[in-house]
Image (tube, rainbow, N blue to C red):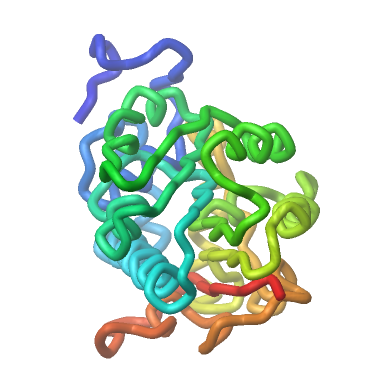
Amino acid sequence: MIEADSPEVPPGVDTTVAHAARVYDYLLGGTSNFEIDREVVKRSSAAYGGLENAQATVRANRAFLGRAVRYLVRQAGIRQFLDLGTGLPSVDHVHEVAQRESPDCRIVYVDNDPLVLTHAETLLQSTPEGATTYINGDLADIENILLRAATLLDLDEPVAVVLSAILHLIPDDDEPYRLVQTLIDAMAPGSYLLISHMASDIDIHRMNDLAEETDRLQSNVGYSFALRSHDEVARFVAGLDLVPPGVVRVDEWNPDSTPHRATPVYGLVARKP
């Protein structure tokens, strides 16, 4: 774990406010997090039914990401990925999964946390045949991100855009649907969109308690949750062709084994015709 007064802490990081990327890192068993992140996990997971439930949820989401990326490389023939809100490096990041399937895959990672930037070298350990790069940028400036991503990716060819556990951090006032539509409009035909998103209509009471507790912690938390229903998540890919089984819980999306528990997170993969 990183201490707040450690020389590893880069300029611009507020060690008194929890960040979603560091909270996610802690829940996955990582060490790139501060005491405030761990304290927020402790308090918010109590509202969610305990730390074990919270950890199981992020692991299920991570497993979905791996299965979906493998599908995109194996079955869909995708060799280019744009991962928005990538978070801190952990086991089986997108480039690791994709390049195991096809070493020539190219991946652009995007995040706005200075701590992610300090670990970018881990995200850039590409195979010789492929390539990776990291963009320090905010989703609110999506047009600039696309311009910079085009230095590695050929946006005239199919690309898989990855929005894993990021859209539920964007409130309606910040126009998440417009943001996603901008991405879709910039994608070539045959491109794919991968989304995972916390649900408002699965395990409703526990999810509401989590969102409310996160709001109560606002002086110590730099994010809030915009939970959305099945139909609201499906709206992000209106006009695209959903890959079976469609918009389902992440543990139900082409699982490798029988799910052990219902995960209140939707997952989908959709193709631009």
